Length: 112
Length: 116
Image (cartoon, rainbow over all chains, first blue to last red; front, side, top):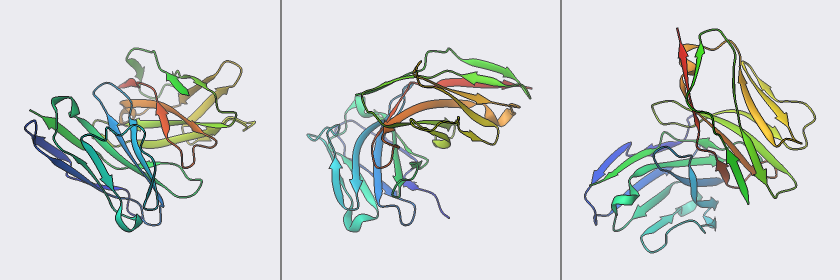
């Protein structure tokens, strides 16, 4: 069974530029999470989807971050415009029912 | 609210020996889960082991066991027979209920280095 897929793995952009991350969860997993992991810290939740509905986006900085999960499968996280402080690893995870959260390899973002 | 505390500095262990990674937690949820994840330098978070707050027995998964002491609010990870491939960051996390469909709150992690 394929794991959570994320792309790109690495992204370097200049501040004020837009950037987007893509996640494909494990097949059949209805819950999808986006976490942000700053250097030297544990991951922190940005948004959680149940199928196509965002059920917890309280930690998402909505002035510059947006996310979508069309058709309840793939998801895209966007930052526009990016700031220096957005440099981090963006992790996607998925789970099914009462399952464990399985993470993808993450996207390492560097904003210059 | 949930909080995970991992305060150990970088840990070192000799290959084939056992090591304990400490984790204390605080949560207002009456039912919760405790998790350990491994993050090698490649960046992926790898699930290791889970313990439910109402589970009577400590969880075990191969070389991993979780020493759950509810009264002390601790959930230490024990790795037996350490291998060189165990060198990584280790994160303790907690989630509501069994952690299903809820966010995980992570600690800052502990760096483990296995010496040959």
